[in-house]
Length: 475
Image 1 (spheres, one colour):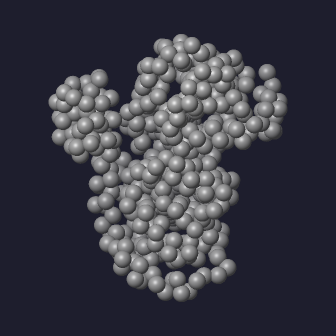
Image 2 (tube, one colour):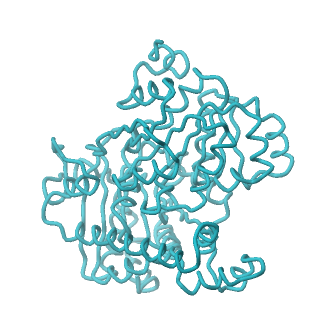
Image 3 (cartoon, helix red, strand yellow):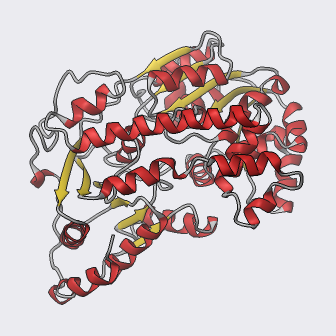
């Protein structure tokens, strides 16, 4: 079988990117695969090409609606018509039409919540699923930085689908996370492909400030003087909105993005960014997976990320076209307090666990009453089907301890005096063999290679920063 010919005839590419062919050959040979490929290495081709060489459909489980919509749009852009997405945002008529014609689709994207709904499950059971893809597979692992309990449901559907071949894809996974992906998906002897995760065109910068006001002054000046496109990551939804509003006042084309927005609003912001209508997006980590914009030149972390894994995932949005890109982490005294809060904020408290276990009615009422957070309910509901109340408390405590360990790595990163790139790779049990010319702030970094200055700067706008900073602070 000439895979290069199939690649060219189907997608117009003359060669594979590193890792793609090895993964595809194993899939076509009938083997399960876990593939760790850095952002920008073309993970989606690992299931797109096999779909044209196997009978039946490819079922792609995707953790985010924005990611799912982006993948569907990319396939349609390449001329693929036999693709559909099943998620909660379909209106009844659309869902009915898709489900009625489900056997006609080569690619079926689905959210984990929809995957186990009885009616959907019965429809899928009637199909020939040749390959099941767990996209962003680190979400499966409770030790991963972005654990999603709903993602554990993938294993529940496997017997009903006749145990198809499995492809688990991720850009960021430690050995511990990889082992848990294997365990939860019940993969006995999968082929594991691990590509060196270093993106040599991305340089690492860390800037330290005495306080939040200095940090904000640097950000506003940098963005006013340098063109995008770029992403500014904030630790909270409120801060992403504040930063966007502040930059917008200076005439910067920017918008905020976070998980609390309506789905259509998020899609609109992403489309504006992709079309070049926005220069900068101020976002929480919700603007990460599924962002496929090749010319992002800057990723700025305004607030400290909660894990190395999340940091690498977000930094990986930059430089997908291979051009030089700069990742800048901003730190001000006192940021440790925010880090400590963010690290544990998305995990249930013991009080929430007890409330859900002791509730005899609809647990969703606990969310409506403000007793339990929605994210906490999702986590507790999964473990309630598998563990006792006390065992769930122990389980969550273990996850909290792991998150604390992850945050400790970030603290070390901030105070690092040695090579940042080497340290990041060591966190993933990898070694740096060749340093790029532009490496990191602690090694060698020529900022002129990354900055694209604006031709004009509105001095009147910049003169008003002091009043705006006072309005937005304290950070």
